[in-house]
Length: 62
Image (cartoon, rainbow, N blue to C red):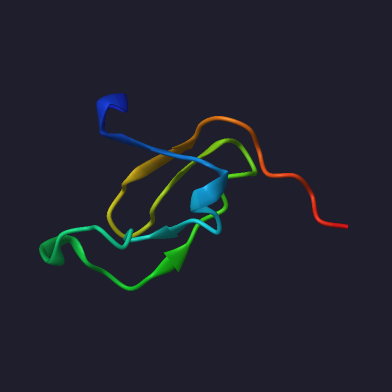
């Protein structure tokens, strides 16, 4: 898969899960939560969608 297939997500999209709510019905699979904060990007184990965190990281909760 090429980088052109990357899906940009922001802190407001967290916690990140795939498939996203606006995904077409044909691309649905069991919901899986993905840790995009660890490296700034993550690939879904079901559909290989690549998510890339853009913008500011969320502030830590104390």
